[in-house]
Length: 304
Image 1 (tube, rainbow, N blue to C red):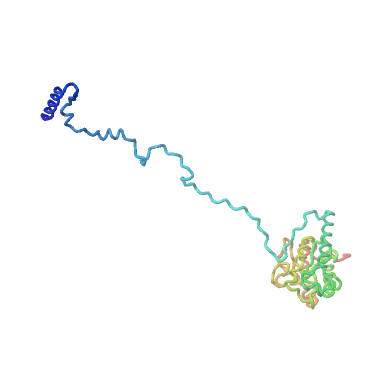
Image 2 (cartoon, rainbow, N blue to C red; image 1 turned 45 degrees about the vertical axis):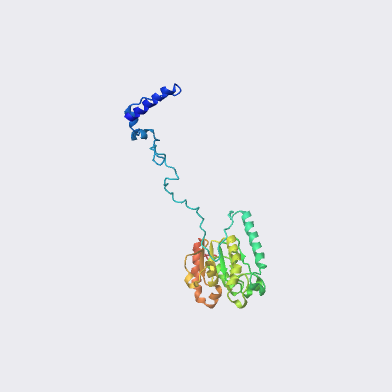
């Protein structure tokens, strides 16, 4: 401090010697302020002046409502797919639904007659399988279009091929006697058809491809006539209508159906001609048909 004052006094003397052009304003500083280094501001002051908080520090704010993007949402079970109508079980001869018009309506009767007549013409002109090459006549079927019972055989024989009508040979004559004696009916009261519509050579059974060609015709006949009972005459008719491989002996007496129509299986008339003892079985089978139709098991004898 003494050296500093000496220097200041020397400068003042020089200023006096050189005149008023050299003016030196000497600040009067307290020794403690000149000597002491500037003190750093307290940490609290720095904190007060600094920005409030680092950018990464969480700012306490009211909790926002959770958004669907970040909030787990309970997963609802998927909506069930639209129900598909069940289909009906497949059969070798699925029936086509019959017209819903009243069976007593004259217009409905006319429609059935016209449809059967058109079907007859289609069968007579059919060339779907090889049987048409050797036939004389196709045999569509015949009878009452509104029959309560339909008799189904396997295929036309030689006599049927010549006449173009079903069951006109010896087997047909026996069938006529069964109708009149066991049911009190005539041929015109029932409907008679075959699975195959043309005569197989040598009276053999129709082959699977021949049956497949004719089966759509039978389906349409059943849909148009819509009988209350179907009587299958023999193994070929029963197996192809029901889609079964069982014998007549195993199918007889069972509760069978085709598209909701009761089916009774019995022996073919040709078999009865060879095995007359089996007529007793057929008698019982026809009594069952009568029960299903709501008729007396044994028809009244004329004049009784």
